[in-house]
Amino acid sequence: MITPDQLTDPAVRAFVVAVNAGDRAAFDAALAPDATMSDDGSDRDLGQWTEKEVFSSGGHMAVASQSEDGRALVVDYRNDTWGEMRTAWRFDVTADGRVSRFETGQA
Picture 1 (cartoon, rainbow, N blue to C red):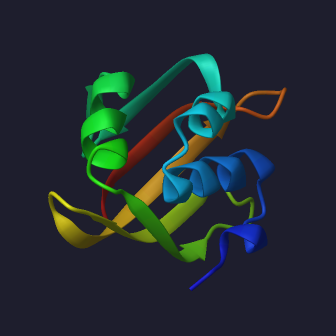
Picture 2 (picture 1 turned 180 degrees about the vertical axis):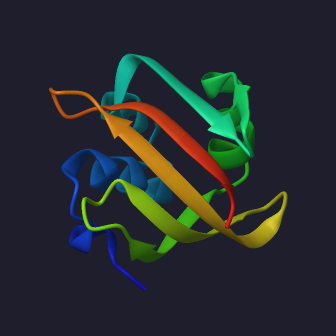
Picture 3 (picture 1 turned 90 degrees about the horizontal axis):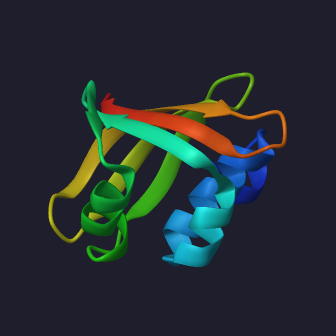
């Protein structure tokens, strides 16, 4: 596994650290104001999805691998609702270093 401090992209690192800490303020700070996301190819409401899949269910990202630029991850994601599953995550990052979009789904 890759520890969060080994993640190449600072914005992705901040995102993973915030998810794993259950820190909503840090998570919000890692995102651009108009950030969007999709799950298994379907766009979702970011606030509703993260509340359900991350914050109220103890979401945790154990990173198995990252792309060369650090903006694509393979993660063993777990939460209290679904248990653990291998997932793929892709991130778009703004010029000021915040996540503007992330896409996740089964790997």
